[in-house]
Length: 634
Image (tube, rainbow, N blue to C red; front, side, top):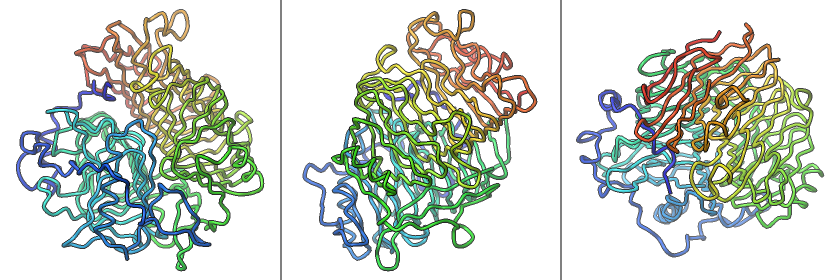
């Protein structure tokens, strides 16, 4: 299997920058594979062949329903050694399970876990959600670390490029990693679909695993958090979005680092060696709903309120505005629950929790009631079986969808996730927006599948907050005529706001934005690797390729910030795209800090001829791995 983005070449000049930014993280020796061989790394968790301990999953009570066998609820009263054994066992099974079917949620009841002398340190593998069950992040404290390290695929080949589909939220980490040698800090070396939300980190933190590197990492998302302990080490993170997070600084950039509403963020520097785009505030946000325990031990779901022009974490200055829903309001589904039963429960007024697992859906999940909350645990995965959508949301306000993976199924679907049914019209509202958070869509990779459109947003005032829509470039069922898919995202609604939009490899225009008044803050794209010829990849008879992001010609108002598109055509054929971004030439459409990159001159060919509307230089083998920037357009 070809590792994702192995073609990348991050800036090799990082070594000098990292030496300045790592500070107290490095305890001895340079950050190189030779100085820190894999055998010395704590990433080598002992393999476990027996069953994962189940006694640590607390029994169901009237206020705490059963959430299935793959949801582990830990209590501070449990022996730390048993907790450590359980989390290590899960990590050892999941660390290399990129396209497997196991799913886990590790939930920590309020209290403290680990001590200075005996910390709790563990890894987060594929399809694993780690979350505290407190009302605030300070209610759950881990003395230790919750880490994601490189995957070492062979000698000298340790990368974080495949570290997808895992999450960390709603707790505090007092960083403590004694005896780990190089590892003196919180390591979160991830790429797409690995969000960190609502986390307090007290101590040093790095977004790359420099102990077996310097390694490559391909993007990430942090929101609603507070990171102390000095500058975050971005390292080899090629692109990253940080939103509404209090930080003590940022060590460096590579291609596209974007900040919105982050106290302590660096000032905009674009173009520059760091490629920073910084917005003083986030225009409209609503943080992700989360499970928490009340004083009696019962489960509830807190739904944060919408905010405008926000700065810093929503919980940072006192009680957070929002609504608390008792667990009795929720229908709890498992992969064995018929979709008709789920739909009836939703129609009768229930909200929905999808427990960890893979849901083969004979028909779509239908969300028809305003303010419905759909909460996925452990990366619950929806797979339509008969060419249907996985989920359809009616034109109603206030729907909240979070924590979901949607896979294309064996019969091609016209659309996988439909939000709203009236293009450009009704649905959401400014005071009660529909919100999609940590929703990840795959065409191929895990299994053979195809679709015309991955995600269509017709509801106005929708917030898209960390979306990865991915036509797979590796895994199962991958090929130009196999995992066929035209568009990763179509926005027909007005006043839609997106943060952290990752859309990659689709066979036509990857994002079509047709609604008025839209905003996108951060965009990361790779054009498809595998067009078999230029003639097979033409927008029309005279235009080479397709743009990665197109704002429709009738749109009169749109704003984009920190948006990048990369090319790697890997079949040895000179394939070109005329431009990465296509927008109407009107004063109301404003684009800021755009870039293109040609990846890997060794095996890549072709390129992108201009950044936007024929403006900006070309990205080809003549300037590999080098951003070609347009600061503003028009």
